[in-house]
Image (cartoon, rainbow, N blue to C red; front, side, top):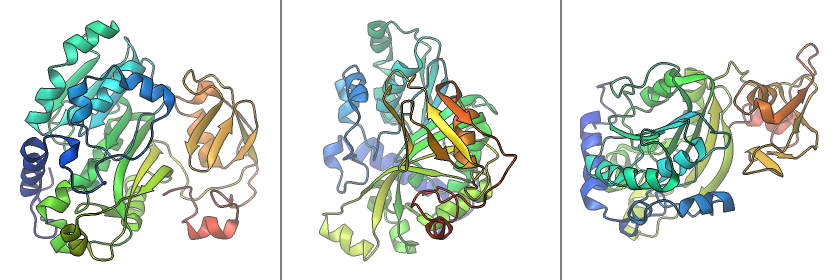
Length: 357
């Protein structure tokens, strides 16, 4: 693990502060002092139905800023980083099924104790093998130490946890290492409209509330490009409210947003390029037969052709989503920059070219 200092706070201290906050200070989501780690997002109907099978104790001790639960997970291996008491893992296990596998990783023993004590009863009730759902203790910056091998995971999810890490570059590098080719990172987290001062980044409460470690959006974009995630897609976003006057005073004019994002381990271009390709959703995803939303500006209706950039075409035909799409066209002829996201080439250039957050 990278042992460098980050704004005067060593990683060991950050980990200790986070463990203390989530292991001993927070007893339920009602103890949170901001909306950052408490999702206001309404899950889709199919996900709400799966929620009924999640034990009440786990639902009550859930801290997250979104619903990063992707589709097409049957028979797949999924890794949940910073799983806490395991709410999302219990949802994911219902999607991977008996032949899949869900690994929840967290560094806080108190939370893992809650997650583990419900596994046996949950598995029996749903008719799942006991090894479908597994919880491990470890650090998200060092997945190798937790026994996660290279190219062994189909999807990595995380719910408002990466902001808590003292070494986010290490986290994203580890994610890319463990993902299979074409694998997906699908996560929710808190981002800021500016770089935060050291006093905010080292404040134990603000860190625990998922604000002190929030990445500046542009620094996040640069970091992901450096690592090899050239095109990160924003799926949905919501403003974070801070009603605690003392915390708001410390934060000053900084504004925060929780985003759900997805990225793929693919050799994508750093700009959205136009090759004249068209994608058609077959309507074969069981939980979303009428429409598939890749991101906040790609909504694929069943059997309705939609023009796409080269990156989007690859996301649909070189990943586990491939059986559900027909992509027409190839890259033999190039038509210039694709106006992706806002309907104009000018805006595409202003946004950095790709369809990223």
